[in-house]
Amino acid sequence: MKQSNSVADNGNGSRGLWSSKFAFILAATGSAVGLGNVWKFPYVTGENGGGAFVLVYLLCIAIIGIPIMMAEVFIGRNGRHNPITSFRLVAERNLASPAWRVSAVVGMLAAFIILSFYSMIGGWAASYIGHAAMGDFTGGTAESVGEMFGGLLSSPIQLLAWHTLFMALVVMVVSRGLKGGLERAVTILMPALFVLLLLVVGYATTTGHFGEAVSFLFTPDFSKLTVDGVLVALGHAFFTLSLGMAIMMAYGSYLGRDVSIGRTAVSVALMDTVVALLAGLAIFPVVFANGLEAGAGPGLIFQTLPLAFGNMPMGSLFGTLFFVLLLFAAWTSGISLLEPVVEWVEEKTSLARTGSAILVGVLCWALGIVSILSLNVWSDVTPLGMFAAFEGKTVFDLLDYFTANIMLPLSGMLTALFVGWFVAKESLKGDLNLQGGAFDLWYNLLRFVTPIAVAIVFVYNLTA
Image (cartoon, rainbow, N blue to C red):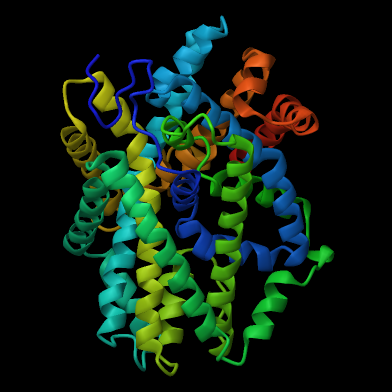
């Protein structure tokens, strides 16, 4: 097996490591903070009881997110290779079947597929930076802004150009390896993202509707917190931390032995939640100030907000800052989605880091063209339309459905079961370095509570 300087590990510690715990936290947070934080979390919080939902969500982070994140990082750091090889090595050391590595296989495949269409959506954010900066939103109407977004989606050429640009940005970073690529990027992009987010929040306080947004997000209203709302919190707690995609295994493989996995996992979860809530405080005052609907999904970001920015003082400036922020969030997530597969190709082939990144990036870019065409030229193509559950779903819809509803929960559940039931308890104690009570709490959550919770999410998503 070929090994390069950037990721090699011959068992004597020669593998590259994050320069500090903070670098790992920034990278993991960058992976977790993505497009979903900016629109989905604030919206579902407001629709499901505000502060009541936040409390349930934080509980779900504790019982699902943090335990699985710790398990994934443990596998990566213990194996010191790509996710599949790390999983196999940990299994063999614990006299378990190497077939458990299917969890990493499913996760890496999901990451690859997700990046193929995530890159297209990241391209939307990049395209809107120019629109905002040029003042294209100024004085816009709902019809003109809707036509702008519709024109983008209906143009394969435009979508392909922005998709290509976004994928090139991701490949550029990953091709430079750990220190010169991943670490350098996140130490620049993540602080910049926080600064931009705080600037937009500051602007939101001038709209006269900041208090309304705070109430929308944080006032507990348990009458709105239904069973479905609790299940939404469960699902979002799992997905928001980039679990089930082998990302934390890949990032964990670069983590030094002196770093506490438990404390860093808690730090990442807290930072991810803070960003999501700040995003809500940035978005909803602007939306409410214009009397607009706080609709969910891409429409909120690419139709509602441009309309709002276009009719507010300094809207072009802060609209530009917002879409730069959105691009940075998408970029850091895109980097993390590409890394596990590139790490595997680099270790398993004769290609060096740059060649591996280019190969995987091009293949992922090519798959993304299918999603692009499914929005326009192939919009009537529904491959599984003969089944009632998939009626009307395009290829893009199907890729999104199978990754989010089947592959990610399956990978996360298998990882929890493997680490909780098949890895020696003493090995976990020594590696995680958690004190007695904290270790017992994590261990019992991972063995009993987390798999059941993920299974509930899995079933709920399939029947929703």
